[in-house]
Length: 168
Image 1: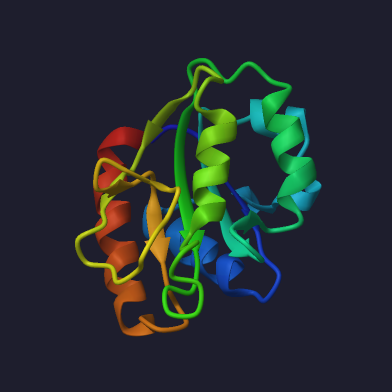
Image 2: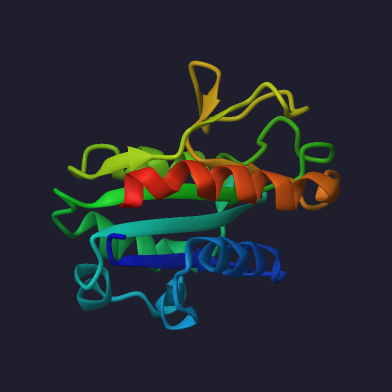
C-alpha cells in the first residue's frame, strides 16, 4: 500500500473519530493520523497518498483548523499524490450545506495536480444541497453521524474497501 497519511480537522471529536476508524480499516498506523492544525509541508511530502477529512461549520465552511492546513497544501506541488476526501455533516439541520467543507477542500485542491479517488454516490443520503456533489457523486465519503449514525460503520467499511485498490 502507498504510504498514506490521514489529516483531519475536528472540533467536536466526530471527524477525529471517523479518521481513526478509516485508518484502522486501512491498516494505517495511528502515527500517520494527524490533526491538520499541526500539518507542515515536510509531513505531507512523507506521504504518497493523503486522506483529508473535515467537518462543515456555519454556512458551509471548513472546520477552523483547515484554514492554515489548506494554505500548506495550496503552496505545494501535489503532482503524483493520491487524495481521498471525507466530510462530516448534519443533513437535517444543515441539509442545504451538507458536507460542504469537503467540497471546499476539493475546490481548493482540484488544480494542484493530485489525483482524487473515493467518490461516493449520493443516492443513499437525504440532504437538499451540497457543493461536494458533482454529477450525483460526493467527491469523497460523506458521513452524517448526527442523524444517520447507524450507517457510519457500514459507509466507512464500504469506502475503505473501495480505496484499497487506489492505495495499492
